[in-house]
Length: 82
Image 1 (cartoon, rainbow, N blue to C red):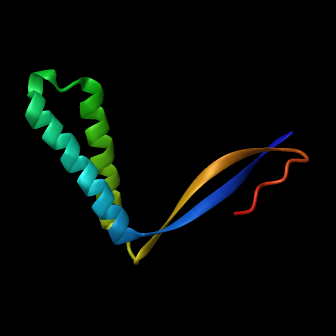
Image 2: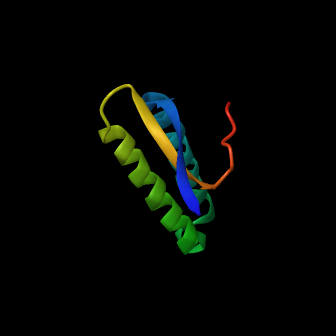
């Protein structure tokens, strides 16, 4: 039987916003450097995805965000403690 465990990370909202904004800026710089015609469809989708993440971060309230992941846990497994 498989269950889903959750792992969470508490991050500074403004710090994450700055990191994602810098990443989006780097993607834009690449687009300008290589030209629109050589900027791949995958790169355009990646840019749209991270810009939507940036919009979500900006719209979030509070100083911190909780990022979560799902980890598969099998019966009898013990989650590591950090």
